[in-house]
Length: 335
Picture 1 (tube, rainbow, N blue to C red):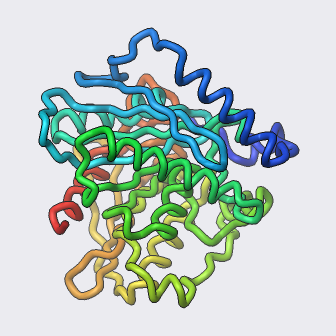
Picture 2 (cartoon, rainbow, N blue to C red):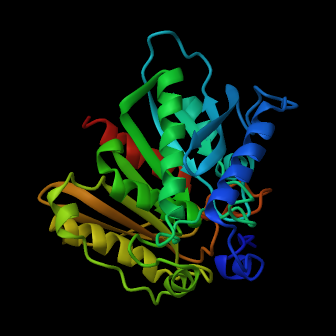
């Protein structure tokens, strides 16, 4: 049976009040720095596969966040590799998310870098990204820290800046969507797994409503419509998700379709062996795919096709990591 990540509803009971912003940021930055400077037991061993597992920390006005970078074996001077940014869900960190998704194995085979930003427990006691906390500025502060981590990796490692994509699970998916809509020129693709679309929440209470499928997604503003087009979106969502209602996946692709003036193509069925079946629907503007919705039968709130031995995974689902990379690679090919 699939193991479920901690829901934001449960987490919020233990997170009754937020720290004052300045004090919280200082404490988060101090702790992140101490942890970043602490020698790791296996600094170069990734959770799975060969390659390097590199620690780092990003700083900004909102404090600091640790991150891990997976670098596949055989990287040479002068290489320019794609970068996939992986944002974990509640109750996870960089290492557990890498182990659950097994994205590093895909990266070793296909030769791309993987960045795993990590939420600080002082910022959220359950490790959730505060994607919903837009009124206080906390969401924007965390988004800026993730951008700083991306910039640092692009500066120090052989990244093709024209080939960067965002992938997230649960609260990480919602944070990824916030980044993609605020900075569309920075990313070529976005993959949301079991997340809530942007514009549905501005506080903890409204986030809980949105997770239950009762959020009112705002239409894109005139400024957003006039700006750079949002990167193509893939949504992967379980039909049996009891934490984030499946209607959120449908709302996300519809938001993208409306912003781009895309039409709905005919849905198709997909299934491989004994894995869960899925319904796949594309949203197209002319011949371009603006958004793709993958609705997975029987999947709860867990990474589809994840490692069976890890929490927050369901090994019976279609392989979300392979799907995410294939989707991103199609967009990179157009760069």
